[in-house]
Length: 78
Image: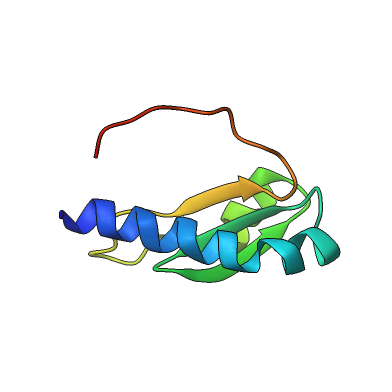
């Protein structure tokens, strides 16, 4: 598996594990995960990204989600 796919899965998995807690405490807020860790939140996407800062060198991805918002179902091959 590629490093990018592993990193995406790590971020998505971390979000799903924390989802119940985030929905109880941060519903409607935007959150940012980098390397499987929640690094920032904010009332707007821009605020959350600003608080998260730059993606560290060598980190292939980050996850930015609005808590409580369902994503459309997408079929993809990995």
